[in-house]
Length: 92
Image 1 (cartoon, one colour):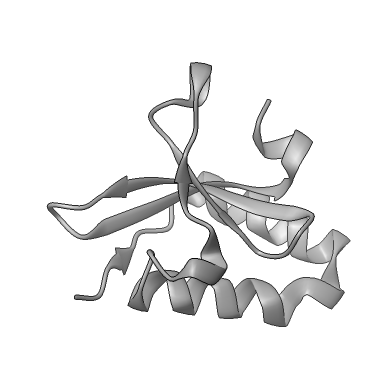
Image 2: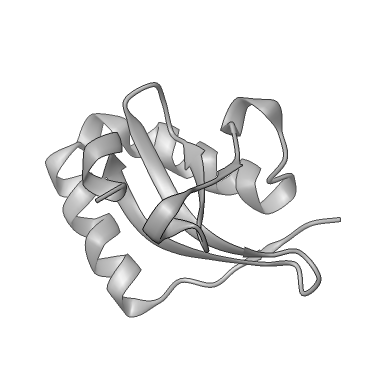
């Protein structure tokens, strides 16, 4: 069961800024998105639902320091990335 990632223009801008700031993470970022599309529940992604004001979002890890927050619709098999950055940047 693969998922479809739907990129919004707002996310694309945030991702472009992130990759410009962190070009060394480009391959890890791409690998995370590919794995997310194939199996969002893969243990290395550490998918989890957020709490508090972000409780409608989930998060996956690019690495120990960087995350992607996203909307996950399991019934429709859609993933909509929302933000990318450090833990503090995406959980504000």
